[in-house]
Every structure is written in structure tokens, then in C-alpha cells.
Image (tube, rainbow, N blue to C red; front, side, top):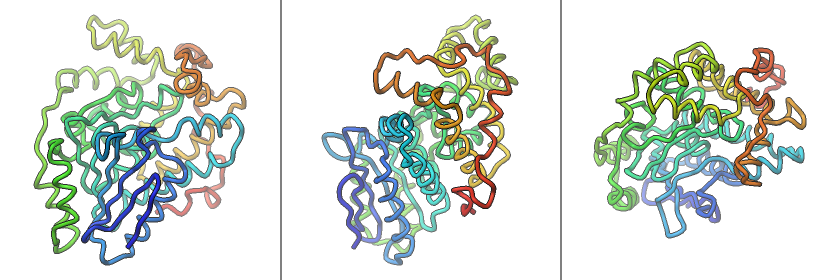
Length: 363
């Protein structure tokens, strides 16, 4: 029986492989060690005929559930990005390979997305056969707040949201709840919070005919949840379909309603350069498969940390948000109006020849 202890608790219970992310003080933010543990156990269980399906959840300081995963370990990324630690390269290569495995997993992979599900937490849940949210779910891809872009396949899954919701989520980093997550195709159903533990326990106690039966059992417990976004969906599609970040922000600022002005104010706080990079990312990704998108994102993340030595928007963004916590990032350029296409284009040039790309093997 597989047993992992520490930050990834992995155990076969009955016919189901059960994973609990166990780094509650960091809201289960993924370290390189956790990425490696997840990859190891998922590959092992994929080959094990006794495991019909996999279920994954997070933990909080009081116990299980309550928080899924807040993303990647941004303090590590700041330290590694500031010092040139080569482990930063390993982290992204291995994390994206893990995301690809989950999307293409040979058995039902069921994600219990309770509490915070952001960034890297989306990366290990969006590829699930069944994405379960709850009344406590807070879902976002907030990377533009730290001068990064929605990675871990974010280009792929956000670009497939209806209309231009993907651009809105990617650029603003706004948080949505269970009903909206279901409505925009980022979750499959809602499980009442009080049912989380009974359903999880039943996975290890019941006998199932096959993996599909495991998935069907959990799906049968799901309920609908009301969406709140509907009232602004037309506005999202109107503004976020525009050709450029500059046009989007100018139109939002010229509008005479509170939602538009608040959205514009949010965008004005983000890295002007990375907003432009992100808009290009989402629009390119609409025409890409997952593997191609992950390879593009791997190129982009190399540029985020190493393209402009001493001028990394990402290192500066993490410093301002999580290290010094002054919430006053010095973006370069400082204004959306000053970003040029020549600044954006290099992010989409691969540093590697095709055969030597770190994710060349992804199908």
C-alpha cells in the first residue's frame, strides 16, 4: 500500500487512492517536493490495477478540507528568482508536466475544491474528471497581482470559458464562488460542506465495479448552485473582447457604472507589461491544445524570471505582495499606455529549439 507522509499524504483506501495536501500553514501552496510527491504517487497508482480512481483534497489548521491549494510557493519563487537558483526551472517544468498528467490521467481523478483554489491549485484540479466545489470555494487565477501570468495551463482552461470570461479572469485575477465556477465551466458541481467528509469516507468504504462507478457515486451527491456573474456577463464580453489592454481600460474608465470603474481600478494596479502579455497568452491559447499551451507557458515563465535581468516584474510583484508587503510594486513600464508590442513579443519566443524544450515529451 502506498503511504506518503509530510506535505502530501497519500493512501489507498479500499479501491480509491486518496491524497490530502498537508501544508495548511501555507494554505497548501505547492513546493517542488510536493510536486514531485504528487507525480510519483499518481504514476504509481496509474499502473496499479487495485486503484480504480484518485481523490484529492486539502487540509486546514484544524483538520481536513477548508482549503484546497493557494498556488505555488511564491516565497520560494522570489528567493530562487532573485538568486538565480536553478531549482526554479525544475519547479515549473515538473509542475507543468504534473498538470498535463492530471488532464490525461488514465483513471477518474476527482478534485474536492473546497476553500481557496488559486493558481497552482487550479493546475492540479482543472484537469480532473470531476471538479467538486463547495459553498466555501474561492477560485481565482490572481497571477497578474504578482507580475506573473495565469500559468499551469491557465491559457488553455481560461480561454475555453464562455465568451470573454477567460480574459476577464486572467487580467483582473478576480475571485469567483461555486455557482459562477460551474456556470463558466471551471467546475462540475457543488457538494454541500457538511457532505464533504461523509462522501470522502464512503470512497474508502464502498465497493465499486470500476472507476466510472466511483466518479458516478460522487457526481450523484452534487447539487446546483446559483451563479452571480450573470448580471455582468454582457459587460464582461463587451469590454474584454476589445483589441488591447489600453482599449479595455479606457472603455471601462469611460463607463458610468460602479462595476466598470472598479474593474478599471483593479487593472490599474496590475503590471502593465504583464497585462499585455496575458491578453496575448489567452488569445493564442484559444487555438492551442493543452501540451502546446503548457510549452508556451514554460517559455513565458523563463522570460518572466530571466528575460530582463534585474527587471523581473514577477520578482518585484512577489516582493511587494508577499515579502516586504508594502503593496507598492514598481512596475516597468509604470503605465499601461507605455507598453509597446516590442516589449510583449519576446515572451512568446521560445528559448529552446523544439527538440530540446523541457516539455518536448508532452503529447
